[in-house]
Image (cartoon, rainbow, N blue to C red; front, top):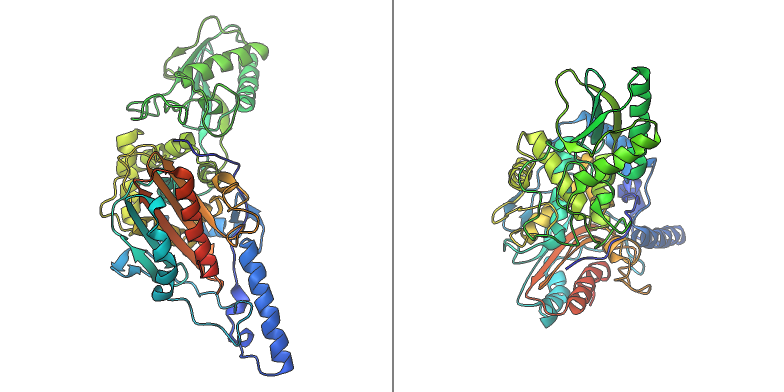
Length: 494
């Protein structure tokens, strides 16, 4: 079952640096203290409602300072979030938020504990709309404290929430600034031109036109006339067809495709798909070469560039930070499968479903995440063989919020914003307390509904949550219940 999709968001994360200073937290006693407390409370609501105010500048949803730091540090370094005990993941080394909610009588209120959350979450989790099996975990990302858990270690079918694992793995392996190259190579005698796919699922006709223009310029300099055109997809291996078979939610996986292999001109959501994405891309490139003055004598054919060939044109994708954000916000299955294969290539594994599973699993294991019962069969979540736990999903989100892992921040900035973007754009009414405050990845297959992301609670804490349900019979009722669960984290009440 397909999910609605929208464009990604570049909204930044919250930071409350100076407010951790105790001088801002004095108990309201005199007039001046009362004004300060009231002002802090109002500002707390503004922070919670926006969930996106922070110092810039930003690039693809990540602070440039964080990008620089990520580039300089070990990819798998920093704090781990492995569950040291059944109570929850290890703490992230960041200070908790400390602003008092509006209406607090004095100072900072005590954080809501597990018992308080249980009283409001348990009744919602027990509703029939969530099917036969439902699991949940809520974690304070600042402290790593597990605030609520039900079936935290039960393997569940995650649907598209598995894209959170995909994003963490590829960013950890390659870094947010990595770009995927599509190249054109010319033979030593310039008589054969090869379009080489690097695995960029976002390659479009404008990029192909640029490659054709650069190729034509290089060939004119060498005095070449007609050329033979071949195309190389050897960077990927294994079956191209997803285990679900031909489907409007995914194109056959190829290292070379244009427009995501969509046949209707769309850029998101279900669509008619080509069964020959590489051939279509090569034929489009041949036409653009002809327009640029280079005649291809015959139909493009599969092949590799010969010995002595040289690169005459290169196109680089957007940074991985942007690709991860698009995959999460739009629930883009084609991008997700490409990201898994980039992870596999970095690990020296075949760029296939099997190689991707091994590479992603190994990468998450190195990050210290709880993988018991997990099976990361694909990168998109379309495969029902996928299994994750609610504990793993919250561990991934807490790791992405960890100051020691700025390279993972696009996993959070790519999450759809409730009531505004992506797959949550129409799921929260304007008067919902969760609108604009909850950010979460949705997951939908027949009989499976999931929601995993972050929410700001009344104390200004950033909570990571995962709610997974299977055996559901009404997608709309299940989604409404999941949305209510996330909103409960914001309000503290049902």
